[in-house]
Image (cartoon, rainbow, N blue to C red; front, side):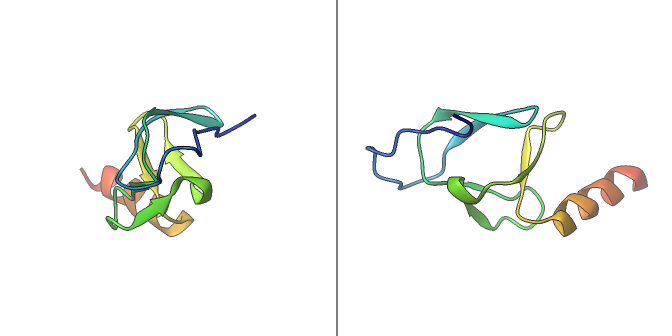
Length: 74
């Protein structure tokens, strides 16, 4: 099953996640991760966008595009 995490633990606090191609693995349990661009909390069950190379999560496609533009400007 993709994106599995232990639901028996309370979903409090920020999770530590290893981002993989097409999936992610929860390293430290928690209820959310933060968007690398906007710092918005993203519930793990709503996480759809991330970068394997940067090991970052994004809240939306717009945030992905913004990060990509920032990288091109460097």
